[in-house]
Length: 181
Image 1 (cartoon, rainbow, N blue to C red):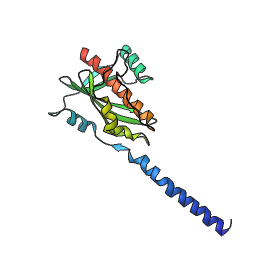
Image 2: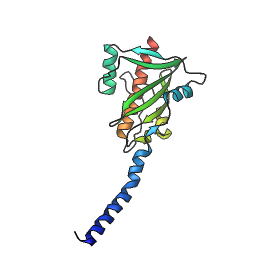
Image 3: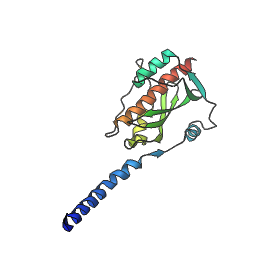
């Protein structure tokens, strides 16, 4: 290879690296812990977080959870926190490949707020912003375990959006069981 060809090849490699570097930076921009579970609970319950409660999952509940998730739910129990009519739920739900830790606060049978606690995916991190999570306020579950309002997605974050919607459905469904216990 001639000296001129080597220089051209190095320049091309440098140009490609510089052109792609903003994309590599953006991929890691959204990753991280935004709020720990403890911080989420302290934010949700002004006085002090209540002691956690547990729902033990029988076969019927697991069957409904599998329908909501479109896959089996493997745990034997689900932990949640409740004070009066307000309850907090924390789930790890897979986006594309990695779990997204999602906190859901309910007041009665409706969503009060949704928070992304930890995001581990390389894309789709836009779900952490209030322009997306605020859409969940006031949403409830239908008799067919669907959200009763449309959630507008985010281009390029389809799987992250789906994960947040599944976590919200889980919280709403399990809250119905907690109320009836």
